[in-house]
Amino acid sequence: MRIAVDSLSGWPLVLSVWFVADGMELVGAIRPDSMLARCLRRRPVCGFEVAADVPPYMGVRGRADVDLDEGAGAAILDRLLVRYTGSLDTPLGRRLRTRREDELCLRLRPSLLVSWDYRKRM
Image 1 (spheres, one colour):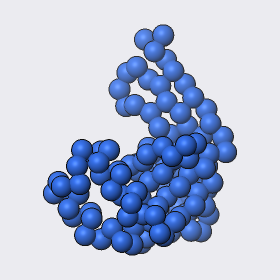
Image 2 (cartoon, rainbow, N blue to C red):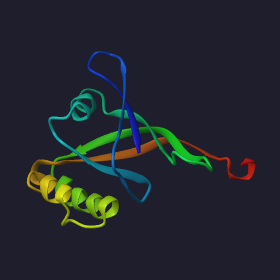
Image 3 (cartoon, rainbow, N blue to C red):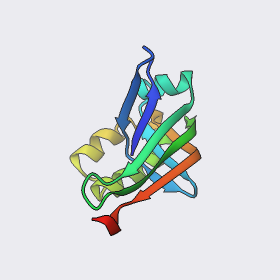
């Protein structure tokens, strides 16, 4: 998922973040000292896009209010590692899990959704 926020300098900042769907919310995990966390603490809203980078092009984008949950980041990180790497027991998984206790849960609550699907045109 790509997330767009207002950076501390006022310029747009776009970042890619691992995510899982949780009902109508999109959930990720970020470091508490990351630029994204600092921007979202200042202004807890974002634009986002979930889409494939290869044809056929389809996806969803929108706007969301964002909550940062200090208590749920470790569990979400484990879910993300399994989704994106297939296991908790990978070199990346072991490294990320050494500092999982202070991971922040990033929870997007969409307020606007726009979808597109160009499969029939391609």
